[in-house]
Length: 350
Image 1: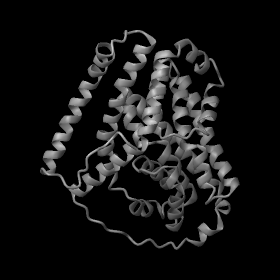
Image 2: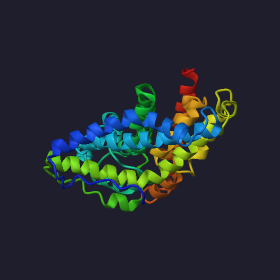
Image 3: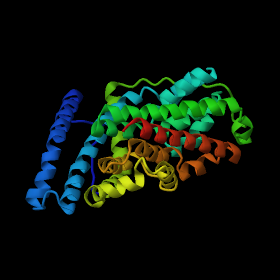
Image 4: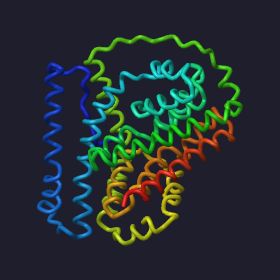
């Protein structure tokens, strides 16, 4: 990854409160200046015409790129700082020993504030089994953690307000809770690979690590820097595609293909999302453009959730620890939940 260098906070030259305060002030200046700066660059410096396809597309790109980066750098750092109090060593004992119902609710809630994605599925699954966490509770966490993506949540809040962000969170939690309860009731432990059960010890030694606030802030910033470097190509691609949709795709076309009158719209976007795994942050600019063109909220939420929760890479990874019948049930439960969320939001929100 080149072209995007971010400083480190590990050894600040100034006192930490001064550095943090300066960073917050710079963030606020950037947040309020990025929209006027984008219009000035597009329509004054580049001399593009407002209202034209090219002018609107370029202005969208120039405005969204710094906006999304600011949200990532600022809010994700804060979220990660809070999330530092919930490492896996603390999560496993919290979930172990609970009943199916309270454990499932707790697991779904903890999934929101934890940074795990499909690449973490196998070690998390094995770690939860080692700690004696019930299978349904484990799957509630595995569904919630990628589906209710914390980056997508803060981006949605910043771009669209709390209404859509909270709707996204509530929908994901509902799918995670119902999916975990169903898998737990079906008693599918026989479909977990045998070697996983052989690793179970039932004994987890508590790990006590004392970190200063400077350490926590440094760790949070390091995670944010790594995240931004990792997903920056997705952001460029997503914002570029969103700009093309915003500038060139007719509103009538989006309405006819993805509108409420097309009953196949939700299944189609879910099907398209399975092979096209992308970081959730990269889908936000596309979502923004599609919503602006009139794509219903339910169809949009279904696409976002399917990209992160039922992607082909996650199925391949999970196959290492669970057998095909359980994998098929997991995929069916989550897909059914996502489809239901899409149809429900489309019917309730006009």
